[in-house]
Length: 140
Image 1 (cartoon, rainbow, N blue to C red):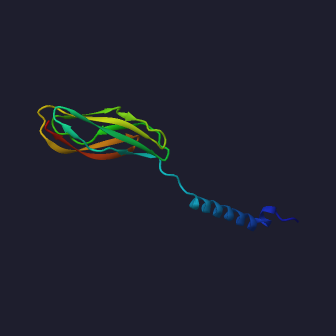
Image 2: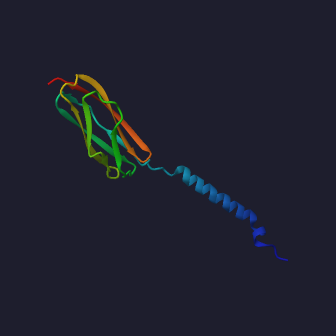
Image 3: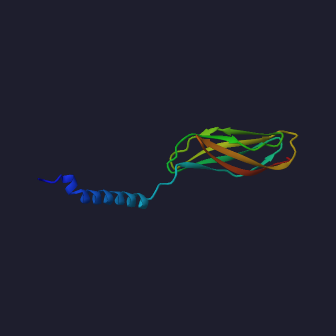
């Protein structure tokens, strides 16, 4: 009577399965992972002459192949008489590249001279990134 081939070779099958699992685990642990797909923001502060306006270039930098729309908003409270406008309000950077928006800060006549922080937030889906810049309003 002949023995069932599976029973006859079960030790070899078991060793082969273990070997395959070890190879897969080794490959997974040694394969470098790509950078996370995300974005960052960059901007610098400005002085705003009272009764006028100044502009800030807001850079939306793509990392890890990120290529989705990023909506820009102001998250800080601006001083009385100071307004902020993005043009455009949403930017889609090229994969691993940079998109830009212009933030215009205007200080109405009668605004007092002061220093303040502006927090710019970029949002894409559930991902957010903030950058804070220092600004001040000055007399003409």
